[in-house]
Image: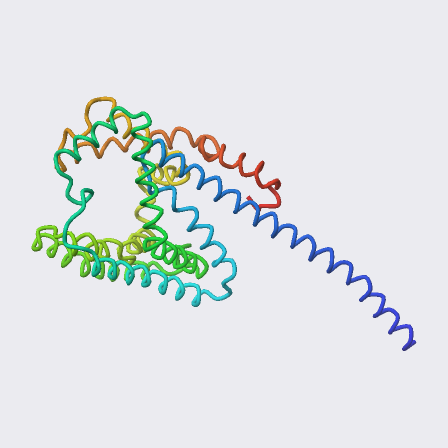
Length: 333
């Protein structure tokens, strides 16, 4: 009897080993497919950003995805939320330190991008309105400068914000898993902290007459304070029971679901200003009258999302599937 019990136990173990091996292989295959999906998705987005910056002039989108790829690997390897958040804080502070260092070693003379003269403004108007290879050449120079700044300084801050956001998502804070009172209190504290940073910086900018060394570097540090960015989310979560009653909120949610489509739609709208003779025709106060034009995004998104996803999002998804060689069930999408 005892020997029979040993053989039964051994038999169960022998059966369980192939089962565990099969489960492990399946899990590894899904993880590998998921990895290829994310890499292909971000690579395609980086390529789109490069094309967008080179031919349409929005140069800041090209550098986001390379930083996203690096940050994604760091997020994947992190095992603790606290360490992930702390790493993000360190990276962000490193970017600030580099920015301050650049400000200290920079000269006092402003470059043409900070204080362009009449000739520079006229030349900018010329190549932006006439296009052609002259415009592509200028955009390529601007794109290379932006990528250099991304690697030297801004990339540290961007990666830090991505890691902090990933940590807050893992903890449930960005998912609305905390109490309404917590979000309302946190939102109020972050707004107060952001005002404490930005109001003195705005006053300093006015007092120093937009001095290049201080305003181009130290003032920018205040603009990029993460507490100002984070203050919006807890306010949305804290007052969501009241906000969700408005139809406009649903339209804004549709814009978020079609983020890439709306990003390109904004480019299309702004490019039309070049062809209507409106470029450099208005001052800052007059430009506020054009803010309602973004209602086009609300209208287009609300009408289009009777379908499942936006047109560019659909194309992006299909190209990702082809590039990664994965199926939808392997990507959990």
